[in-house]
Amino acid sequence: MNKDNLDKKLDEWIKELPQKSREILLAHLSGLKSIYPFNEYEYRLMYLLDKKIITFEEYEKLRSVYVNTNSYLNLYNISPRVFGEIWAQQHLVDADARFKKPSKKVDKKYSGDYDLYLENGKKIIKVEVKACRAINTRLRGGLETKALNFKSNQPYWMNFQQIKLDMADAFIFVGVWVDKILYWVLTNKEVKKHPTRSHQHRGGIEYQIGITEKNINGFKKFLVEPTKLVEIIKGKIKKP
Image 1 (tube, rainbow, N blue to C red):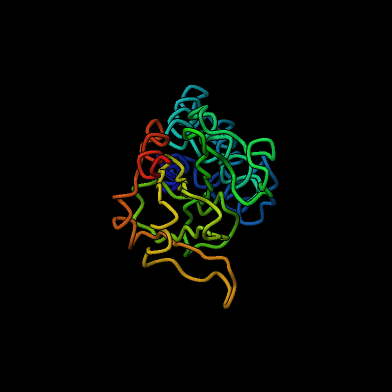
Image 2: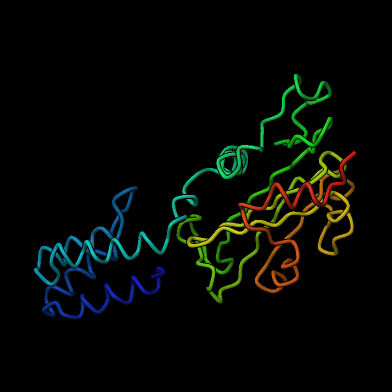
């Protein structure tokens, strides 16, 4: 169940209200001031409960279906820095403990230029992590209101930014939808050669790669299941 389905269901219930009650609700919604966690959905549901259009059991069922089909919607609430630098990296470490956080004890030249590493014989594989959330580019508002499910036909653009070439051996691009997470693995060489790579700033040393609903199929060959990330990366990076 996506946001459109939820709106449709609520509209069906609202139509069951007596005309006067419906007019009062719509009037209140037109001037409603919302602040997290009190929003128009909470208001509509409480109004429907109060008017005995729905039961608490129906509310619970609706809530359960929506939560279960939007497992990653909460990731749209966190700031870009926390999402990209903290959540994404820890998410990969949680998925496979062989991903480790670098330090000068492991790499004397380390200066924060890559995010994770993998042991690879006597050497290490430097891994950079980039994460983006799919959002509807046609809508205005907060990320949560623009969040998309994977099968949506709405346009989106996930821009993986601040890519510094030669700083890492492999890149993991993490794409998040409300109901799905995808992982693409590219080596440094593959990033350099990829046709969608472009300068983030004119004349700068940082690059970007954009994944949209139009070109996502071109990235299929880089898709990796989370349980196979380490093996795929090690397979792509030749051992010394």
